[in-house]
Image (cartoon, rainbow over all chains, first blue to last red; front, top):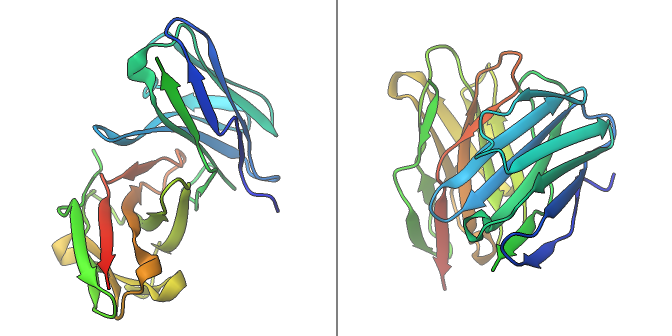
Length: 114
Length: 114
């Protein structure tokens, strides 16, 4: 298995631009999680899906952030417009079921907003 | 609400020395507990987990952790540290319900000196 795949691995953009991060979960996994990691705040859960349905988006910082999961093998996290304070590493993780199970993390997308 | 505390931000040990990383959790029922490791520039990798049963759990790379309910702790140990163990270590707790969410600690960065 290829594991969780994220793209791009690195993204540099200017303030105000739209940023789209992509994630392909492990095949057969029903739950998908988006995290943000910064030095100041550590690892924060932004949103998670179960069977392609958003279950909890209370961690999404503000309306500039949106996430979709159109099918079981693909999810996006979009920031529009981006701001310098959005600079962070964004991780996608997946797990087998909606109950507590091991989450498998992707390599992350390092985002820098200038 | 659940919470996880990792009291040590940064620990330095000599290669070959023993290691113990501390983790305390706050949760009303029996917690589901995890330790993850993050190497520089990488995603998080599961080291071990505790769901029930034997309170001493073995993980990969020679790590083990002991669940102590009376102390609300789940400390990670390794008898002899290798230089390749230098990384950041995260403790996490899940509620075992239908949510599948994990709460992560802030992490402990481990440095290994020759």
